[in-house]
Image (tube, rainbow, N blue to C red; front, top):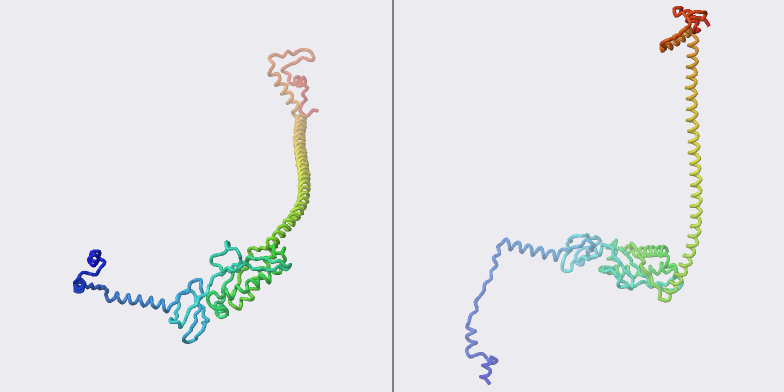
Length: 372
């Protein structure tokens, strides 16, 4: 059995093996870091800065308020100074502590539907409100608020998220019940009235929370749900009311359409009358223009004819003056220029002597100057 164990390696070590192993010396390894004196000082300084930052400095983020509480030392208690964004000195080892409160807007969502929940909002169940006529309704609402005085919040409510647990949440549902609970079942469907009640709820919350450093900006009523039976009855009633309103609206629309048709027809008639008046006015003005034009043409023609008559008169007067007979004789003489031969009697009482000028004048009935 011993021989078998030695062959399989499951027995003891061979004789003398342990002594040889103990006498064997392992080589020593010396590790040295070649740091200079300046580098050591820098590393020590960096270590001290890190230690001081982690022990003596607290960072307040841009969306936070800082509240310092002194536990050991002078002026123990909550300090009234509000610390803003940046690094602030805080004594370590529990002597002082910096608490943080949110500076940005906060949202309290009250609903029973997880699909519409916001990741960064505080969730609560929907407000269960009894209407003024005795029915119950679940109201989904969102309350948007902020911390306006962190010192008041810290001293009256407490640090951390107590401004939610002991501040806004206990007051939210009573405010909605006190305002929206005055509505009847049907009045919940009146949007302007519902919005007015939501504003009243906001004012109610501000009266309750102003002394604690919280201010509510908006109360938004998102949705409301009645029980299935009540919801069904309300919907049926609303459908009937809407049908009545639809019929009334259609009747008013028909009356207004008849008025519109009458106005359109009266307008068309008025337009036609005005067009005819315009055409008559144009025709009258054209007739007046033509009359004026013909009148002026007639006056001009009369003036021309009078001028022509005056010219003839003046010419006749001129012809009856001195030398007119001689002018006629000269004209008659010009007629003779076109005659080659004129046969005149030369003897007897009517004989013509071309050398007798006086006889020629008497022949043409030309009077001497001055005779009439």
